[in-house]
Structures are given as structure tokens and as C-alpha cells.
Length: 357
Image (tube, rainbow, N blue to C red; front, side, top):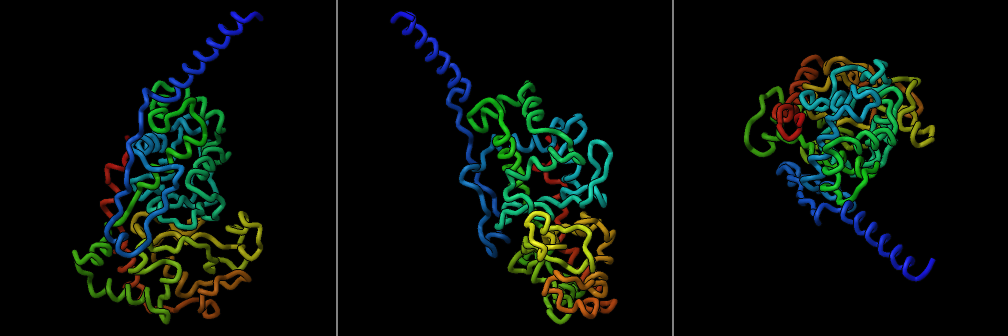
């Protein structure tokens, strides 16, 4: 190749490169930064949320993540979205013991509610802690053969062919084509904005309302190590997340069939341990436990009162496991239930920030 043609070929490559650069940024479009609106009840009592430096919140990223969360294109046959199992009107659960996948097959775990995820300081997700970030957990249900039964490659191809998504991804992240990292980041951004912090008990802590005598006594039982002894795993007025986000064997089975955390860690000492769910929004999130075995809140209280099972890995915090539980009276159970229901945030169910776009 002579000097002229070499020079021309170089110019063509340079122009092609410039063209690609133009495609990777929409006229220098810069996403609009968003600062998470931290509720006062959290701001006064717990550490600030964890926002990864490589995935800062932006208006464009949050809007894109919300659109993806409700989009059935993420499933193999376009029949199921994240919101099918995590319905905002049910505190991001689905009301079933086990969720149904696209092939109408039941899974083996109850759908965890989604809220206040930005405050999961340990950054371990799912009942068994198998994923270590919100960004990474996105693709677990998408590729699970029982759930959305899709592949990462197919999701990317469908979104790339969509008339809206390429521009939305470009505006959110400044790059093209679409890739799996961007998908995970967008959905994680939206999920970090899902916040529940306006229950009756939140209002009580802020001096905006009062509790009934039964609700106050229920709170006292919750905090009393000689009675309910619930606060070690499920928070207090000083931890209004109402979870420690850690993993415990809470005495459900003498021989746990589901290994829980042990499946992720490989450590047999973790057998039967599951992440403590938040006690927020219990009025909307039945059935309860990792396998949805308890249909009612009364059944949950009965378990801790007289249904604990001993096993080699039962948590030491189950101090009265030898007695079957904490042995509450009928009145104590009613009062405890009354308090637990004050943790439900009714406005959360209809907040337009979380409704289908």
C-alpha cells in the first residue's frame, strides 16, 4: 500500500472512530445527579446508606431502572417482569407462598419484600446471601430457569432492538451498545430509591402521633429479653430498619431441608440460616419466613412463643429453644401483634415513585 492509500485508510479509520465516539455520547449529554432523600427518622438514628461510587444515582439511571423493573422483556417469553413477584401495591411482594415463574412452575422460596435496600450495609442479598451487591443480584431471577428463564445475551439483544432503550441507556450511562453492567446498574439505582419510613411507629418516634396502651405494651414485650426478646435480630427504635440484615437459624426445623446461607458459603455451620427480613410492612407481606410457611402473623408469634426447634446450628439468640420458645401469654401475643402492625407504612403502597411507569 503506497503512502497515499495508507494516509487515506488512516483517515477513514479516524472518521469511523469519531463516528463511534459520537454514538457513545449523546451530544455530550451528562446525567443529572440525584441525592437520595433520607427520611428524618433514619437520618437521626442510623448510618447513611451505601451508594457505590461506580454507580451514583442519576435521574436518567433511576428512570431507566424503573422502566426495566416493570418490563416483561426481561423474561424469555415477555410474560413476566420483576414487578410480578415484587408488586409495589403489596410492599414489593406477591402474596404467594412461592412465586410462579414464566412456565407456571413454583419456586422454593418466598418473594422477599424490597425496600430500604440502600441501608443493607453488608451488601448481601437474597434469603441465602448468595449475591454481594444489588447490581449483581439483578440477573439471578432473570437467568433462573424457574423464574424468568432467560439469558443475559437475549435480554441485551431485545433491549438493543427496542426503539426506546438504546437512547435511554446512552442518556443514563453515556455509552453504547447496551451491556449487562448497565442493566444491573440501572435496576440497582431504582431499587435503592425504594424507601419505606412512614409507619405509625415512625410517626410516633418523630412525635407526630401516639400509640395505644396495647401497642406500647407490645413494644415493651418486643424489647424485653425475658419476654419477646425480638430486638437482637429485628432492630429497635434505634434501628428503624427493623432488621440486622444478618443470617440466623431461627429454630424453624430440627433438620433444615433448605441449607440457606450454607448453600452460598459452603460452611455446614451456616445450615438453616437465612437473612432476617425487615418487620416493616408486615400487614401486607404475608405469608412469612423464607418458605412462606406461616400464613398469618399470629402463626409467626406462636412459632417464637412455643414452636422453636433445636438443631446443631440454631442461633444462640434463640435462648429459650429448650423450652420451645419464650412462652408468651395470649394477652402478650395480642399486644405484640398490635405493636408489629404499627410498623406498616400504608402510604408506601401507593407512592407514585414506585408505580408502573
